[in-house]
Image (tube, rainbow, N blue to C red):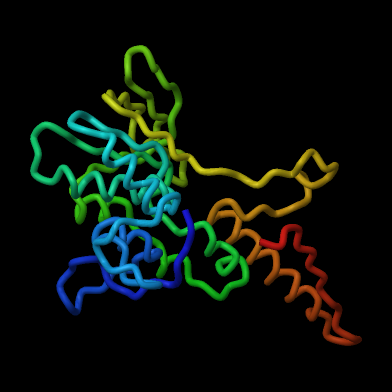
Length: 239
């Protein structure tokens, strides 16, 4: 899934004056179809092979039944949104999104979180709110087991910061399961990379890097006397 530009504020279809951050334009397109861009008018078919086309093809394949999406990244979130609106008001189909986090932030924005130029809290999207707006259900939790023959999956219990149980282990049955858990950075087995590098695969990792950067900056100039130190940052990957 690719990014077409920073989105304007406001949830698709919400009343003026009520603002809710939307992480990227692709989510708007999931509800309203491709916006006019590069000669493509709203409502026209997406270009073959594009992100919208691939999600659209999957939506067309899924008919009535109980559909679950595992993973609330850009792909899974868009799919749940489109399916929820497609089956709105139907008593023959239901859509559930499962993710281990309560909120979504678009992964290509994590470098801005790491640099401190983006407020992740202001730019994140709440899965429960998105589900309510777009007629699907959300389950918080991480998959523990997948029982393919019986068509159900088990979710781990959810604990708070003090280790107290918020949600018990659960099982969810399905007719169709779409796994969209995304990807993680590859260290290619380079010695020391896994132990000493900070990866930018999650919001927590990005915020950890930002704290480490601030602490290094403060430490470099903490001495009351003498020249201030310098900070060296090595970045692997030019994406």
